[in-house]
Length: 528
Image 1: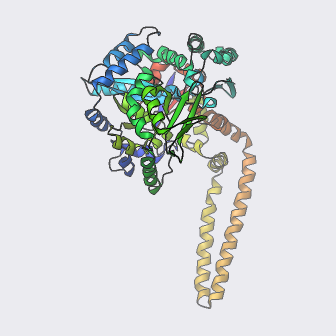
Image 2: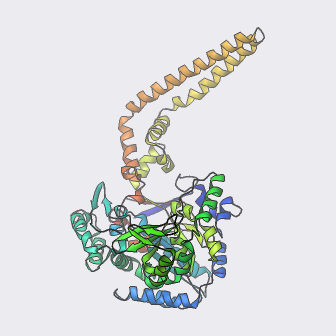
Image 3: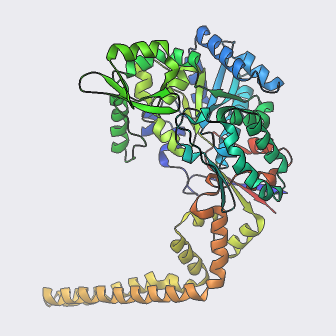
């Protein structure tokens, strides 16, 4: 049995103001986006989206080929066929190819994008909205994807491969999965684990393995997984990559970064003069232009004419970095919304200038859903202690202080004592002030000394009371570790194996139905 509670952004220190304000007309951050993250904003986005029949034909062809070896699914086939129609649009999320999907928010992002597509389909009949998962197959940060956790135990593997991780052999991951099998069996999610093993066993590459897995778990919802490491798709993006060889994006990103800084926000990304990599076998090397006008990529050197010719003939050898990947996405998909986490959406806010200069419609930015799975007994203990879930976002020592203050009300009078001293001292200052400035300064100094004495007494008493409440503080720490295992927020640490058994049966469908991507906040799933 489960129930849910929803917490607004101002109750939980989870979503930055930049993301929350994207729903608010008139927000200064909306100047860095195109439309607010509302149904009205989404309607404006699909009315402005102009996606050519040529691009639709290429997209349908590539995706059909990528799905050819997967089990047929009616919902997926309908989504694929829909791409040939002019009134079909996508809502997209993206993520790295994490082993066994890695932390829980991988599947939360997908559930969010499916839910948004359903809501749009219901609200705008006559239009088709396809949920898309963009597999980050060209990423090269293997250490970020080679593991997952069950409790505090980490299951990981190594590889001698380098370059785009989507091309790495899937069979290398099987040893890590085998090591986790016994622990997973105890969690009543053996069917999910069987899906994972099957996907990696039957696939040649990591990209294929993740596509098989999300197809198994989310195919009935019509989700499409796209691997953009493809010649034909890159051909559609080649004209913009040609422009980028002359440093097209650099100034636009820096201009947006300056605006963010003026608004008191820290820029999330820093553009390079050329925001492209060169893919060559097992390497992914940054492309840099040299003072003499030539270009280098690792050990390779190209003249200007050579690199432009290389790009024209082999666009699949060129890979956009974090600055241009979103632009690539919007070129090859009829996309109207990107669903992402706080850090992702913040870096998207630096990119609109590139879209405007390229004449590409900018999508609506939508914050993914956030979830916390909490035991009923933990919530009851929290309430008994006079604590709220929001308190657990405080640093540990501050949380302990909050707990002690809830159980030692007299400590709350420390400020009243200080105010009483100030009032009495002010009377003395007023009196002695008439006698001479030196006497008044002396009384003011005495006031400060008195306040410092109270502060020292307060700190010492609080320290003693923390020891007094040691037993109670242990369950406070236990609950905090439940919310922040190993100091990391639960959805960014725990795997599907630890958590989704709570939603059995049909855990992915239940997760999807709990999502409300246009209402930012935190959904707390409370279970017994």
